[in-house]
Amino acid sequence: MDAWIALENGLVLPGQLFGAPFPAGGEVVFHTGMTGYQEILTDPSYAGQVVVFTASHIGNYGIHPEDHESKHIHPAAVIVRDFCRMNFHRRSEMNLDQVLRQARVPALADVDTRALTLALRDEGVCRGWVGTGDPNELVKKAKALPTIEATNWVAKVSTREMYCFSAEPQVDDPFEVAVLDCGVKKSILGRLVEEGCRVRVFPSRSSAAQLLAGPTEGVFLSNGPGDPASLPELVKTIEDLLDAGVPIFGICLGHQLLARALGAETVKLPFGHHGANHPVQRLSDGKVEITSQNHNYAVPLESIDPRFATITHQSLNDDSVEGLQAEGLPAYSVQYHPEAAPGPSDSLYLFRRFRNDMATHRASAKISSGQFQELKKHAASG
Image 1 (cartoon, rainbow, N blue to C red):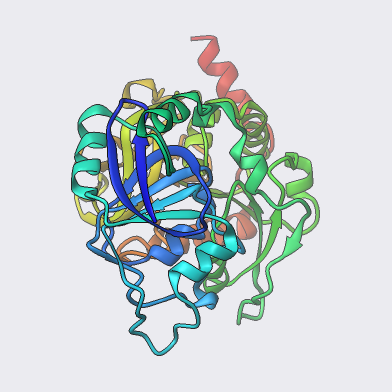
Image 2: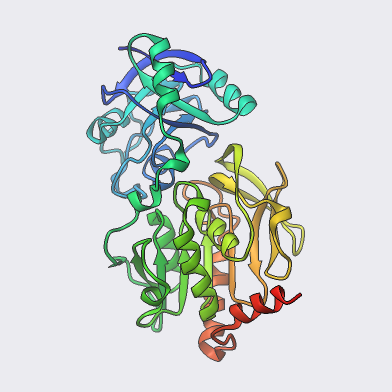
């Protein structure tokens, strides 16, 4: 079926509709990874967005349900250049068209994704509408869509109730980790388990007291969709966690929220970072990590107060902040995705660091409760 992708700036490109035969729209982003379309579609961080894949062929290795990052397909719509209806993988159980139809998510093939990507790169991210009919009307529908900042996407994708992750660590004395679920990926939970952690996953509305109740020895701040500036209640929870002195590790949105708790700001990037090939430099020794990234917001370097945080990693593409360490506290975060699903495994050491922080804290408990509040008081007094 002939259809269109229409952007709010007036750009309209034709294509062939597959997946669910329904119109849909959202903020349009492009992903530059060569593989991993299944993980991307099931990543809650893409909730409400229209994902454009820049790789030429999408769908060629089918769908493997055990590789899902969550139970649902999260983008509002999908745009590809060439949709491969035949699957060439022995583990494939379904094809992309079937999965999208079941999820009631439309997709558009035979689109000039290069032209679309260049438009987003040069003019910035914008809203788009996928559908049939008069292209001018589709542009109007794109303009009428709410912005990504107008919706609390974290509340939409977070678990409603606390649950224990099914996988158990194969160690005698595991660390007890509480995950603040802003849209966590299954591969992150699996990686924590591989590092010897027993994992409990909490709703995003959970307080610091709820996260710390029971045997919690470390708190993980997950990835997720939306604007961190619109989540002040989460920032307050993280401030309370910092004051408790518990080891904290944040990824992506978790990084942005930790930064805001440490007094920094966040801003929207012109077109975001979405791909499995982004170079990041570790400032402690100058080594470069090739990273997987998926974020529309970033922490401005100039907003970071050195009394509260130190920059640990920086992007070699645009110099944006890619990692932070809280001053005097066992709390750190990275903007990228070190769990390597999909993507390179250069940064898996960050999970080992979290385990080591918990081991140190378990052995000595050097960080006393209230230290973060004292740090803030000292900074305020000059």
